[in-house]
Image (cartoon, rainbow, N blue to C red; front, side):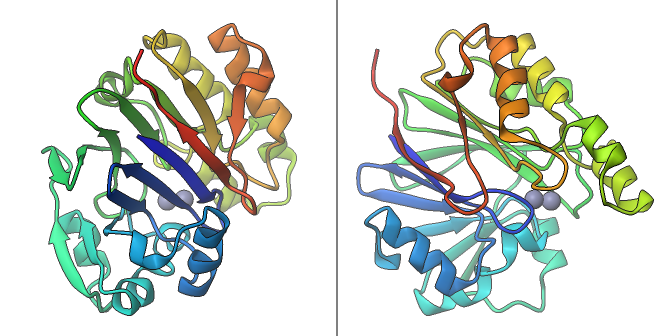
Length: 255
Ligand SMILES: [Zn+2]
Ligand SMILES: [Zn+2]
């Protein structure tokens, strides 16, 4: 199994996960044309993708879904709430998933879980191939015991490290947006991400990626340092998925 991010942040998110001949796009938050350009950086074309799996309807996860799905005849997996929130969008095919029930697409197993975030029915996912599990956790205001249990003992982790609270407080956002981002249904801070990682079993981790970093209210070195301290590793072991470049392929191996 391997994965790569096409980009991550408030201007767009998309993750590619591959196992054997199965390739999923998790979220599609760039224009369809931009998704195609970014797939090309990974030596992929749209025909290589089998399905879209969408975590929630916010535009930075949704922007290209309708056009990309229809242009390439791809099914779109959604929770019923995300479906209800996006009823005006035409999709090539709609597949509903429950955020409480595992499902499979090709060679990949998906273990969704609900997260506290200000969308209709947001979910995040652990994605497995029977041997390894990649935990994906983003767009979540606070960590619940269920979230902690889902991402425990994964082989790789992509974790939101959205903001530094001091930079957010002193930054350019209006007060209402600051309150939303820092709130119980907003986004995880660097310290929130570090506290979660310190609380779970990370012994199997082959890769850890910080994602959804705010360009206004965070700096990559702050997110990295917080997680490195929690993991007792060097900061360069923590990958950063940024808005423009994302992150190139990372492979999971049997150990
Ligand atoms: Zn987002
Ligand atoms: Zn969101």
